[in-house]
Image 1 (tube, rainbow, N blue to C red):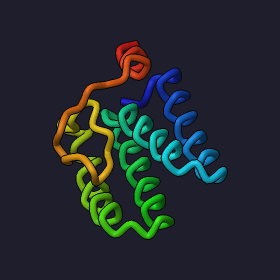
Image 2 (image 1 turned 90 degrees about the horizontal axis):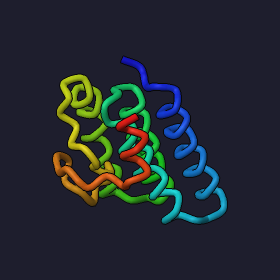
Image 3 (image 1 turned 30 degrees about the horizontal axis):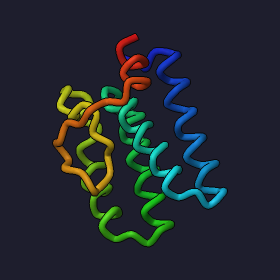
Image 4 (image 1 turned 30 degrees about the vertical axis):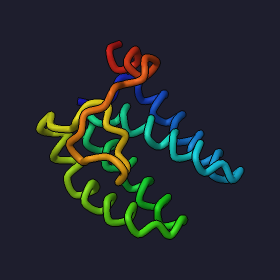
Length: 115
């Protein structure tokens, strides 16, 4: 099932903000937007894998070996996890959190996901 238009728009906006923030040198802000895009994408295999690829690229640019290894594993399981409904809700997707750890969903994102 494809993302609903409003959810897709929010997802794409988070990815654009991540790119813009990183280009301004706002690394922490860029990562936060990638995490938010991840939360929005978890139920959709294509977007879910896409955001993990973006997180991998972010880790590559930072020369962060831990993030690179964490994202490789996540890229491999993101699609099947979404298809099987096994993606842990709210998980922000970085190597700094457990791959199966559910996390609270910010209210603004919860409203988009519930719509």
